[in-house]
Amino acid sequence: MKNVTTHVFALALAASCFCSLVVAGEKIAKSDPDPVQPILDRLAKMDFAEQQAWLRRLEDRSARAARLSLNPEQSDRQQALVRSLLHRKMITWQVLREAIHQTDSLERKAVDRLAERYRNKVLEAFREWPAEAGRRAKAWETTLREWKNAGKNFEQQDRLIDWLESSIGPIPERPIVDGQQPPAETAPQGPSEAVKPRPPKPTPKPIPKPAPKLPEKPVEEPSKPEPPRPVEQPLPPAEAVAPEKPAQPRRPERVPFALPTETQVPPPSPVKPVAPAEPTGKLPAGSVRVNADELAVRIAGCNMAFRALESELDEKGTWDAARLEPLVNRLKILVVRRGDLDLFRELLPADKRSTVAKLEKSKSAVSQLGARIFEARRTASSEEFKGTEASRRVELGRLEMLSRRLAETAAKGKKAQSP
Image (cartoon, rainbow, N blue to C red; front, side):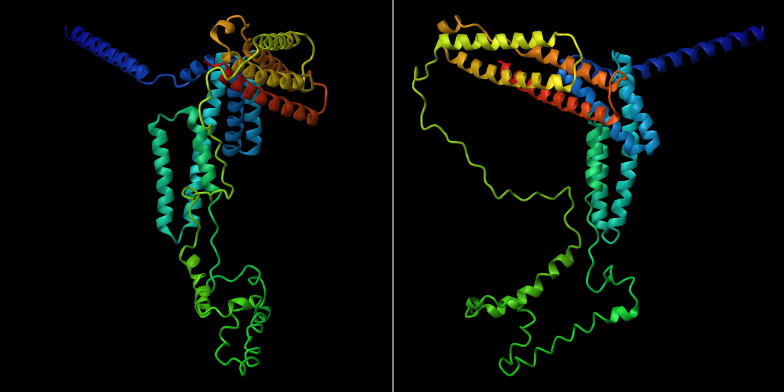
């Protein structure tokens, strides 16, 4: 009977432990959502050109984080791994998730290394000024705390790296104060050479020459090395200018370092912007007249040019930067022309506006051109490319420039077409 009771108690204890583990697991699953899924959801809502720009930025972030956190050999291997994930013929969501995890891990290591370098740099440069060292350390702690409170957002992680790099680099060097540190050139010289700079000091030789002429001004001669201004001599405050000159070098001695880069304000530009001219009054109604027939002809020509560009992008063949660059230029001109014609069409009265055809949107041409640029980049990165490594890098650079120009054109067209 005792054995049966013992077995029943053991089974009850095991069941209670299992239930508590299940409940704890459910709580952990609910409190730890997938941080990558919201990024993928936002990426799915972008158009093709925006997605390509986002992927290029992800590749650049991964490459920079690898250079900052790994040695050169490991950095090359890691960059090749991420490049192989992002330059496939078909990028799945699982592959993109892996690329984001790889980049996130590299950037976290880069943040740790840069933070350590920042602390060491501050302690080394401001060893004799603990207040300034404490201020900079507090600035870093505040930035890190705000970033952690924001949830360590992956999309803002590169901004933290930018802040650390900009804060580490421009820390000023310690100035050499007279009487404290010898110049670098006299340090390796011997004692016999160190005595040589002393002979030039006996400059009182020219003092006895003007002494009989001006017995009261031998002291002013070394402080007046600029005699080409005889007109300023009759001014009475000439003697007051002399004590101001030796007083100026005392100011930089009190502040041995320039202001930190976080608090420096760039000087204003000497060229003041010219304010745009404002109209003196409102234009009277009916003062702007648009020829509806001529506008309809121009709109038809613009729509036909868009269709011709789209049909040319549908052609088969090998796509490279030389073939795509004229098409990007044509699309940019068409987008600008479409915006101008749309403005003139809005100036028409409502009854005439209905008789003029609407302008076609540039979204289809932008998507086709972006797909062709992506195809050309894939060909240049694969073994199908016929050429040297130098020509491959040049081709990829031209395609990168065309992709950026296409993104700018798409943004302008989207802004012009928005109601």
